[in-house]
Image 1 (cartoon, rainbow, N blue to C red):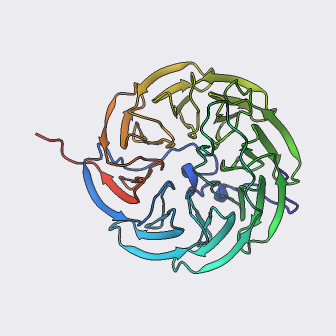
Image 2: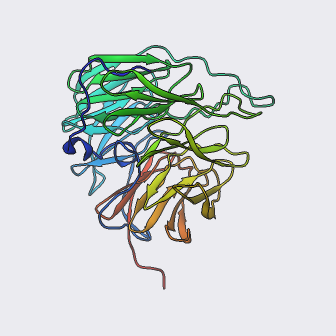
Length: 389
């Protein structure tokens, strides 16, 4: 990766408030303020996207934006679920959009980055990157062609620049107004993680097993960290997007580890093993605790931010690829078993609602409503309701 040639990101206070993007902000902490959706027992509305869906919704200015495998990006009224407009991309849309400067930014599986008008859905610009790199071979016995490569990189918007990874192995910085490329940096494999920013440094990992920190002004690499890998997945690919919590950078790997690195030096501060399970979801962080889910380990848990020591573990009914949302003292997350689970931050106790389809998407919480999508393309808006008597 290589960072920009232009003078970008001094990170004024206004830029730091842009939360309408993956995991609710450029630091990806996953914390949503405002009223709580509580027990999710009240269905506000449902809507059909019309295609298989792994992307997560975002809500901005009363509008929900989400893409599907058909290539359709839809804008829905967040209060009613009514369709406002649809934009047809050149390929499947499988990542979260970013909304800023009255535009919606997203990427298709054809490695095309789009900007469309947030009110009308009219295309403002598009930027094509290179062809997707061949995937590395899996471990012995790993099914041929099965790589669980579900997502493209979501855009990071920061101070007028869109940062995004591509299947061609590069990370790009594009001018948000025009789509003009400011820089591109080549890694050794596909980049599916969403870049994170503290305003001065861009942090992102790749399927080559490297995690990079890049100077946002010059584009020079500050440091890189190589994941440990293991006998099954020696490359230690990084699919998880990083969360930035104070002096620490947190992300998961396919080598079964959750990593915490020193944000300034890239030194490993601690690691937490997921016992034969990928750590693919982006951690959520609040008040000195890290909340993260496990793929084959089938759990959601809380660990201490400073030490990585486990505080509590909550079993789930299946794989957790969804990145959890924090709101109102609770954690909300989806599972492959079709459950949207709610757990107390204090001890992990809580319940969940079971749907008929897998949930890859991460929840979005806005004004007391939790929005999420199931794999069959159904969008749900749920809030607090009366308990059964």
